[in-house]
Image 1 (tube, one colour):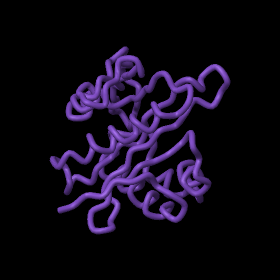
Image 2 (cartoon, helix red, strand yellow):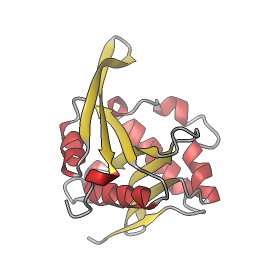
Image 3 (cartoon, one colour):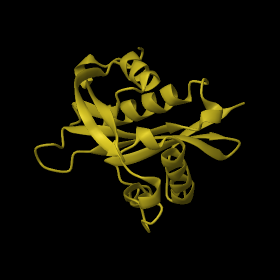
Image 4 (cartoon, rainbow, N blue to C red):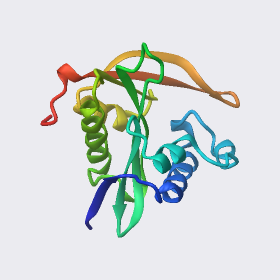
Length: 176
């Protein structure tokens, strides 16, 4: 099976939306937004970024036989004092494709593209604290935990802790 990776461009919005909504439905405890809320939004923020070709806010996709099976994105800080950093967002690989290195490849593409932007010095991300495979992947790329916020999410009477991680450009090597 050959996987093709590329930055999403105008025309990919529908496929992106499908995969993003699939991620929320497949792993509802791993994301801060709810599928039932996002499905009602006429145009998701990243649909606009993809459509307009935003240089500072982008999404990569992984494709198997022209079917998008994974995504990972970057959102740059939008205030003058935060434009030196950004966040890795919406990392998801369809479970049917787990174990093929797709998540790592997507993450490397996003990190490399983000650090190639003028002025970007650090990247942040967050993940459900109990998501060990995600933590291990992010640590493999050099991200370090700087905190865990207990009871960050609440669904019904169930709480979820959130792990916050960061990576500085000066500590990143694409060879890791």
